[in-house]
Image (cartoon, rainbow, N blue to C red; front, side, top):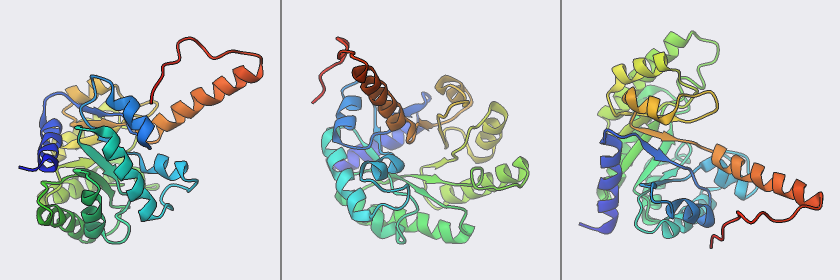
Length: 258
């Protein structure tokens, strides 16, 4: 078994484990190293929004070549840890995009449906799974449905039902887990887990969301933090700059990371 295949299997096992997988999203080599050094880190996940911001692009506007270049750097910095990449909407050809991402060393990805017709995104899931098989990697797809965050003004119950229908279809087509972004309360999470499956839901930790432990108790497989990790880092950086402009000094608590 190749090292990459072993990493892919590890990621799948982490999704299925009783303990919720927490992935602290990264956006470049040094942020990856900072997270990878922590003993609690089991896997690395990229944040597409943050990578785009690093290059000066709005979320979703960054060229695929730049995304893949940074993903490769992140994989190298991650060492033995499995890396799951945020590949937005698949860049127009999800199967080919995943094939190229696998070539950079990733073993999993988020790809979002953007509420495209169900059959259309199911075909994307099947193409992604086929790409992994062709490359000899049991690829771990975290298939994202925007049923809640793009539901518009429809009742929440309709959005939950849509997310469940889509989630089941994506799992049947070969996805490993289903990512349902949004600030999910306990009742919504409970309905999604009951409808899609225990340890088959991936969520995002946002202000106002439940704690990781609470999501774990509800049967969630994975929690990520998206672009908020970069925002927190930049907030700290800007606060430091404000202090330095006010005749401050670099705090002795700053750690050396390189």
